Amino acid sequence: MAIHRKDPERWEKGTLRVIAVAFFALAVYVTVNSVLSLVGAVDVKHSVVGMVLTALSVVIMPFLSLVERRAGRELGSATAVADSKQTLICTYLSAAVLIGLLLNTAFGWWWADAIVAQVIAIFAVREGLEAWKGDACATSVGMVLEGPSEHDR
Image (cartoon, rainbow, N blue to C red; front, side, top):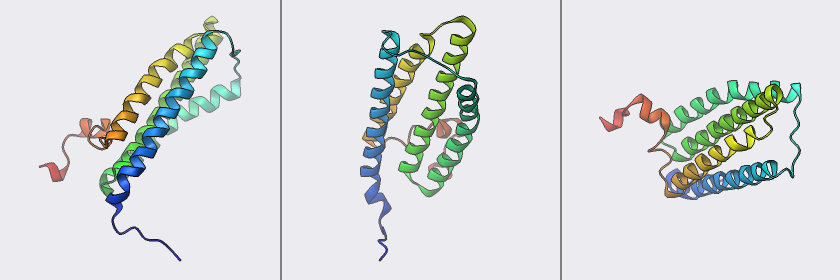
């Protein structure tokens, strides 16, 4: 027996709240790991395989986010747009990790990744607040860059 949702907008608010909680959890996780790295409780290690996988993530994830955001806008789904932002934050996290790994490898700057992670945690909290308020669709970077949609004209 399949359950059909005749009114998808009815589910948007709850789903956006789940996405917001995921943003907040991500911010807490990144902050805790960053602080543990900075106080020396976690030893920073790296590998070539890890660097390659992280670099691939930095290249692939923005395209995935863009496709998801476009699909969300076309479907009128704030949930899909909010999820595309989460995918974009994963790109930023991967970039921060890669930069941190490269700086650590090249210059011995073990703290670089932890510092960048704090900035990303702040961004995750901001996006979580927007998703919690239901503003995920209205503030999409893509929507700002691409201008008003047809229904806004």
